[in-house]
Length: 229
Ligand code: ADP
Image 1 (spheres, rainbow, N blue to C red):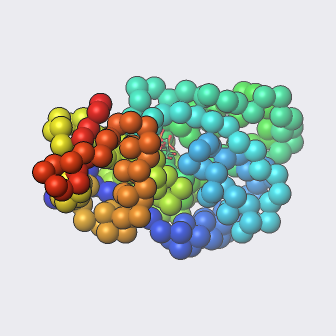
Image 2 (image 1 turned 45 degrees about the vertical axis):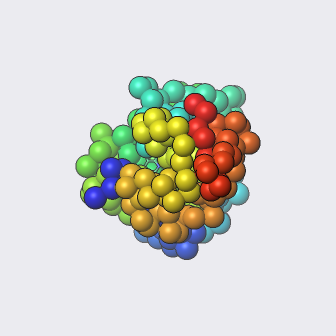
């Protein structure tokens, strides 16, 4: 078992889930006039949902809660709100990619209710982790019972960077060959992630080098990486 359970989500999954979610919403008989995407995870799902539901009004609010992959901050907070948007008489749907703790989606819903006088506010997500959340969204496409970190296509590079950094910080080992780092990565996060996102693994290593956190090093004629944290 890897230390952190990760599941890779493909673009085709995202599109299928957004389509399913649109069907669930249509079947409920309630129609949103405006969709509010919770930045940043809700952007792509909300845009797809607008397409499947034929909605043209899409706004955004930014909530910060998970600063790095699989690392939660103490308290969710609203970094950017909706300002003075006038939502009087409108049905508003607040949308995120996943409901995990439930904090972001609840905070965003309350902020929309307070700021902008909507007629009604409902919530939606592609996925909901029912064993983790204290708040159930009104609509979702997929119920997840066990906690995983879902590696969505829109966070592939930043997740990789966070995942590698976590290994470097926890292992405190000065020199890494590519093989050693790959093996450790599989130990931490499982084989699926490295196999399906190998291009991003290499891109993340490049970015860590650009930022000076890893430096190319000669290990007796073999190229390796020296960590500089
Ligand atoms: P919510 O309030 O919707 O439950 P959280 O506050 O728990 O959301 O998380 C905020 C954001 O962090 C999510 O919208 C998502 O982008 C990211 N996130 C949280 N948990 C996970 C997870 N298990 N897998 C992938 N991304 C996650």
